[in-house]
Length: 101
Image (cartoon, rainbow, N blue to C red; front, side, top):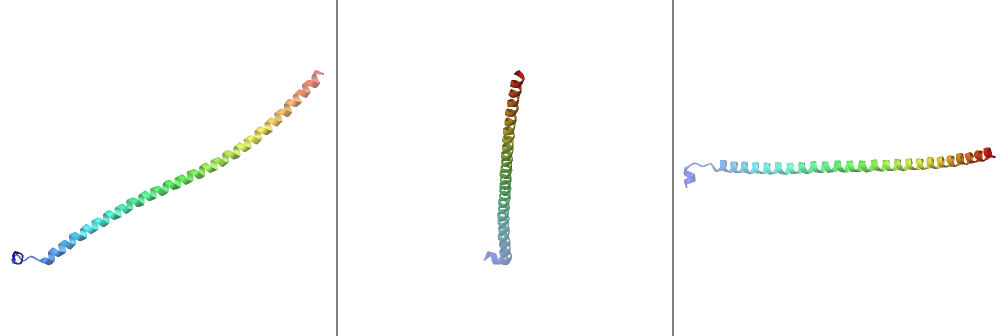
């Protein structure tokens, strides 16, 4: 009865309550969106880290292949050098033998 005497407008109370509820829902939605954005940033960072790791692995594979080719080439050069040194040493021994006799 006291409410009816003071001319309380129930519609304005209801609209204020609705507005408060709407503000709470908006704030909750903003928090959820910010969490999703944080997760998206984290996932993007992880994706970049994975890309960097894959690129590093590819570079290491290329470097390993290059090192293998270089070692093979070096091994061939060493073998050729050894053969040439054996031939030169043999010729040197033959000349030394021929000169001494």
